[in-house]
Length: 79
Image (cartoon, rainbow, N blue to C red; front, side):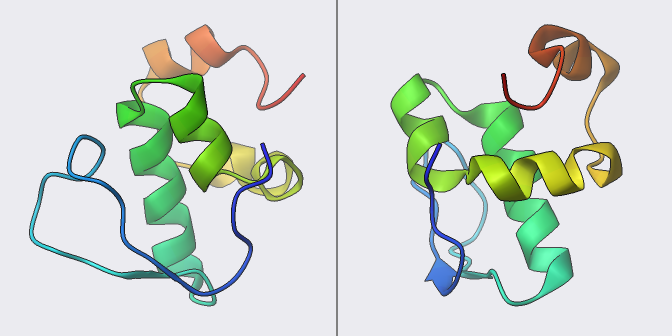
C-alpha cells in the first residue's frame, strides 16, 4: 500500500457515494475519515493500494473508528 501521503483526494463513487468531497490529507479529521471509508468500502486490493499508505495506516490503526467485524477481518493493519 503506497497510497498518497499529501494533497487533496477525491474517492471514486464506489467507495464514497455521498456528496462530492475532497479529503485534505493535511487535516487529521479528513485523513482519518478517508482511511475509514476506504477500509470499509473498498472493493478490490487495487482500491486499498491506491488510497492507503501502509506506514501511515500502522500509525493510526488504533485510532480509526471501524466496526468490530472489519477489525477482526483485517487482523492487523498491515502484514
